Amino acid sequence: MTGFDIDRFCAFALKLGHGGALGIALGSHGPEWVELTLPYDSRLVGDPASGVLASGPIVALMDMAASLAVWQRRGAFHPQATLDLRVDYLRPATPHRAVIGRGECVRVTRNIAFVRGTAHDGDPADPVATVAGTFMLLDAAA
Amino acid sequence: MTLPPYAQLLGLTIEPRDGEAPLLVMPFADSVLGRPGFLHGGAIAGLLEMAAIVALDYALADEGGGRIKPVNVTVDFMRGGRDKPTLAEGIVTRLGTRVANVEAVAWQDDRTKPIASARMNYLIVRDS
View (cartoon, rainbow over the protein chains, first blue to last red):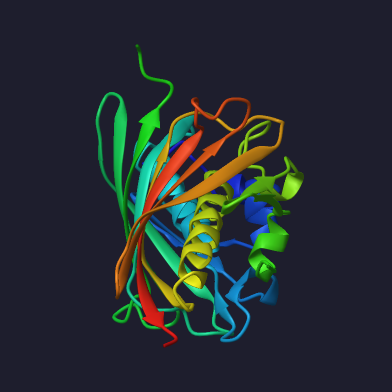
């Protein structure tokens, strides 16, 4: 399959920057999908009254899961930029539960990768969010 | 106005404006970094959502206040975010009884050259 070693990549990439600040960690993964875990953290709360996580960290989680899924599908790390990302918030994530985000790459064309995703907080059949997005592939010929 | 914990993680500060919803400013810092030298798309999205919420709160305050629940967000990324502060403004396109349509724009040097924009729908639970 692959020249993209996701375990090795995530061992350093997820420690850095925004992903590192959010505490995001690699979970299971397959040839065109990746699961990441966002631990519950009071620093990520959007509504202090309820303790519900802000929506921003969920977007970040899904952006990274989807991005990794593209590299999994392509079997290599290539530079890419998120073109757009849509998130439907199906319900609030339950406070004190980790959120698991699964990104899938459904198709890669010459310039664009198409991704889908879902996020849940324990039961995949009861998701907290669904996601659709596209990435611009920056290694493609102009 | 106080921002929630997640806004503090992003390092956001509020820049008040006369008769308008305030702007939000996000400094460039390691905690909002994506690939080296560039802002993380997730941090930009977080900034845009926070700007939308601030603008919606501001508009709602005029009408007796209320709680807001995010329904969805669509973020378009236009340019990489570089090593400088990022500003964001929320614009309430329509404030209905139960639903609000809000846009947000983020830019660095030039308001007319946004690095990202977003459209959001919110459910509103009115206080009164």
